[in-house]
Structure formats: structure tokens, C-alpha cells
Image 1 (cartoon, rainbow, N blue to C red):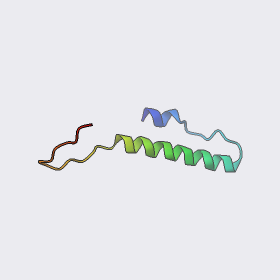
Image 2: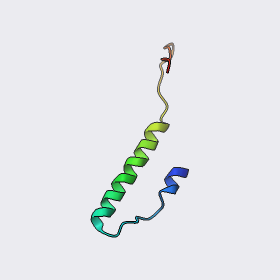
Image 3: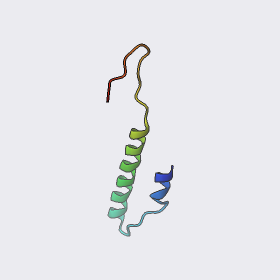
Image 4: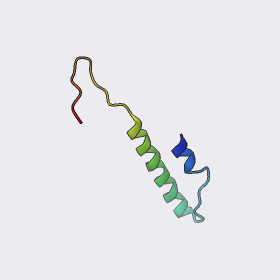
Length: 51
């Protein structure tokens, strides 16, 4: 949540095209944070691969 709040509530660009680009970049950042925070599923009785 902290990183999401760091992005701010408003768009900083003035033109509509740049606002669209900024919104896409923010969505990509949030999706990356979500992906990194997801746990890796491991079935019961399976060995966890070494990192």
C-alpha cells in the first residue's frame, strides 16, 4: 500500500495523451507489485525447488 500511495492520487501530465500514458505506466507498476507479492503455490508432498 505504501508504494501505491507514493504514486499519488492525481495525474501530473497536462495533455490527455500524456495522461493516458501516465495511467498505463501506473497500472503496469501496480500489476508488477501485485505479481511480486503473490505466493508461489506448492502442492502437498512436493519438494520446493532450491533458489
